[in-house]
Length: 619
Image (cartoon, rainbow, N blue to C red):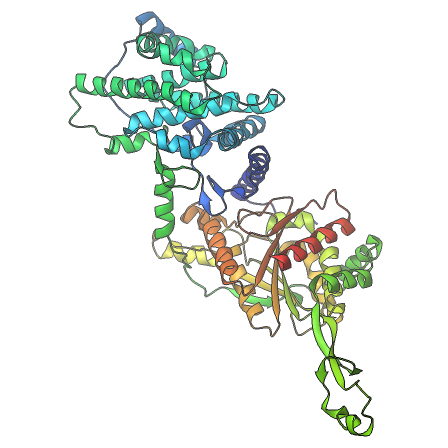
């Protein structure tokens, strides 16, 4: 049976998610901070966005850059040098879209950004840096970048890959800077020159040969002003306070040169750090402001955060949404065939449902009063035995104690992402979910098995309605939801067996809107009468609906999922957990684990899920 092709935009997002997960794992390992993760274009420490620290550590920013026209020239280029620039730069990439780069180059570039941020968190005292930062905007930026170079220079010798990744990231940023033609302005050339000669001095790495001719004239003009401080940077790199003194001197000189150039061009009264032109510069030379947990927050991130706060999730229409039982999506004959195939997979897995039920009982059950033990020497007075005190004055066993037995007063829902990319996991995931559901049923846990997808690819009727309405801006969600019930709480596992077999039907997997599915599953779970309520989400990535993304923005659905997950976690009425299939979901869920079903046995995968449930109870 041929599988429906996953739309290109969804495949690209999935690849980016895996790249983000790889970078996040590296970031956590190198910085020794487990709360770090990636979400969309930003890094986070818990719920707090991290700054980019320096422009070359912000790979996504190069896609937004446009040339900034500035007429002044701080240091004129030699005509012979200028004549050779077009040939020297002809081979450089002219597109800033990282999707056009080879996969290896893209991975190395993003890894370099993650490595640089990790070294900054590890080797730089954010509080000290914040205390020493200058007030002037341009000086502040240069000072921040010089501190980043100091952190990068401290990479241990046993981490050659980290050093290589960071060099590749810096080179990619330089190419993007030139491809955006920002070096054609005097301020751009000044900043690029200072960035390169400073980094070369601090890290002891040579300047890119392709840039040497272009930077030479400006370097020659700047060197007399910053040469002494520049020479001292590498000697002092192990002492942040001493290093900062020389970095401050360089930062002030660069700011003065920029101001002098503006005055010479007669534009001092037109350009200021708060001008629109300055705001455009922030897209390539990231500014930082005090106040974040790690020390600073970039202006770009502050702008994005403001947009995120103003954003409210919308739905263009719910007229085509539906909730359906999974058995209604498959012909009875095909359902029976799929059930036979699923039973065979379960039998060959070698997992005992009874043994799994006992392990689940141990994880989920809590002691409950199950009757009383009479004739005890201590405890609660048993009124039924008080007459013995008269008949037998020496009888002291007139007390009773509560008899406790483990009982799982738990309602647990399994919510499955049924997007197109999940089809590749279903041969392994369906037997696992079937065994888990059966064992939970045997352990006395009220269980639901739910799934979510869309009725069609790329919007369907809802997208057509939006087009007929004149394509209003920011329409919100633009696809038809399909929420599926494979097993409801009122049914036993045995009666639900046919419905769970529908997981193997390939054409029910389309696109996914995770945030609304999370709310739907949570509402069903709240209706259950249980002491504990647990919701476990199985997914291989972030939400993706091509129509919604194209009509709104790339991270529109991601923000909604993150918001709804955080809301459930704050309410604490439902214990929310997530199981990532080949992808870390910690960007969305506080409690999560990752399964590698291609290389893990079913027994090991179920053990990881049990460990996740145990961790949820402890927290």
